[in-house]
Image (tube, rainbow, N blue to C red; front, side, top):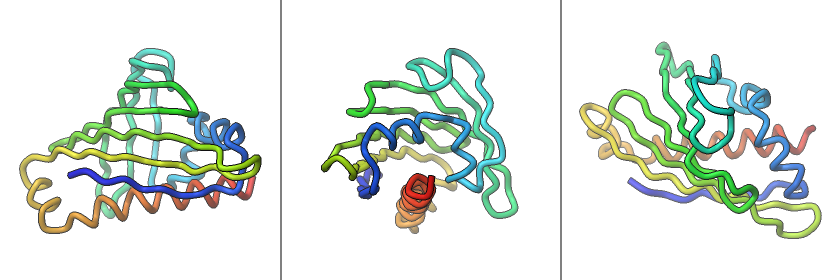
Length: 144
C-alpha cells in the first residue's frame, strides 16, 4: 500500500525543519507517543536506530525507526518496523514563499498476518493516522 499526503504550514522552511528535527518535540505533536529511545547511532542521522513506543487504544505498540536518508529540507526518510508492519516514510519540505512550507509525506507499507488483512479491509485507517500526525505537527509548529 502506498500513498502521499501534503500539508501547508504557515512558517518558513527553516523553522519547520528546526521543529521537525528535534526529537524532544515529538511528544508535543504525537500525543500517543509514550517514549523515544535511541538504540544506536546519532539520533536523526543516517543509520541511527531508535525505539518508539506508542499507546494505540488499549495496547502499547513498539516500533524500531531506522533513518535511511537525511538531506533536509529536500528529503528525510526512515523505515519503521513493528510486528507484521514495515513502513517507509519519505518526507520533503518545500518553501512556497518566505512564510509558508509544504510538507510532502510519502508512505509505503508492507504488512503480513492479521495486519495485512486489516490493511486490505480498512486501507483508510493507515492514511488517516498519517494525516492526523501531519495536522498535529502543523498545529504544534504554528503555535510555537
